[in-house]
Image (cartoon, rainbow, N blue to C red; front, side, top):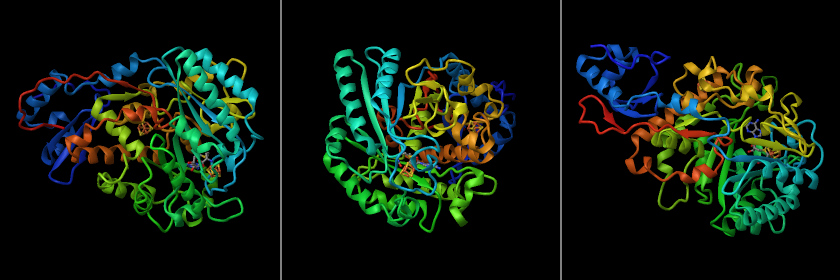
Length: 493
Ligand SMILES: C[S@@+](CC[C@H](N)C(=O)[O-])C[C@H]1O[C@@H](n2cnc3c(N)ncnc32)[C@H](O)[C@@H]1O
Ligand code: SF4
Ligand code: SF4
């Protein structure tokens, strides 16, 4: 019996994820539905729906006719405009200075190779003018305080928060504040400010003392762990309204990822984690010595295997005693699958996300600060709306590499800076980068399929305020949820 729904542009627009228990999870790329199927049927589906037995094909056709299998992701992405799916976000690059000398720093220790000094009052004015031009009552704007080490320009942060508060009251625009900090210092008034404005404090901490001190020493070569720990504790004690995120960069070393997460988790002070592979230019991979980036790539060797093992243990970290609410990237994928959301782009860069720096440059990505080719303009003057932005807004189904990929409505093209670093083109991902993104989705979907309904249906609305994956814009795909009879070959997850 022939199956309907064979018009998908990729021929086989789904993936089968082995559950290891005699059953597999069928992931439908077109609408992010999950179905449980037997391994035997999974083997047939891997060859194509036309290999299904007549009974199986009849059920497949019913699912397609009723819209349970569909390609609404494509339609919803095509309907969206480039400003949909994310709020205006301003990365405020507060200073070129930093007191640490992290082994992998893409900011070259804070100055991105060319930035000098601190962000001054003039650029602050420019930022507020920029915001005023682009927002109206009821909208949300987020400030991402960044650097260098942003707390070395605390006065500017305090000034911007006070100004935002006044605008919030006067004009009804809501502001969200997040800081990415090494948290080696806590200037006077800092804790009160974090609490008053319900900050998301993303502290860069790579694991337990051994790993952290190895990766993130002071400029003088001493460990930074003790100071950071004391400050994390102080932030935690200051207010439960502060969301504390442990932002880990993984570059390998004697202590594995799972152990490093465990050590931080055991402190019971972090609400969320973020786990990123350290990314370095090919020519600079020697900085990791014998942990050099994997052959021909930019990712630390061993990361892929370590992260896959970690996801296998992930569910055990959710306990009633621990405040842990998840790894942001993983929870975002669960949310997209569970709620039927499609990504419009990997991040908000070139759309609703702009980085302002002390040199007055306005950039589409905070990691590209210093790259004059990518610059959109100068603060205080109109920002480019021209051909420079087109590559950033390339629809995923028109990207020659990604349009054939089964996770394209989750990944949506990979990190532009990582692509640029690896291939010289923001829209051409590296094989290694894709391998990681695909493994990530495979592992997280496999994990969620094995969890309880209670886990899958958890409220994840908070993630919308967390700027996960640089504010990945997304849209609800409005997939149908038909009443279906009991099926013999497909279990809905
Ligand atoms: C550039 S720092 C700026 C803010 C602050 N100084 C800090 O360390 O949090 C922001 C984040 O980028 C991460 N980072 C720096 N270089 C990286 C690289 N090559 N690959 C992945 N993450 C990197 C840092 O670990 C940190 O979490
Ligand atoms: S603390 Fe941040 S800016 Fe400073 S060297 Fe480390 S990663 Fe770079
Ligand atoms: S970047 Fe790679 S993994 Fe992501 S959608 Fe494109 S092809 Fe797929």
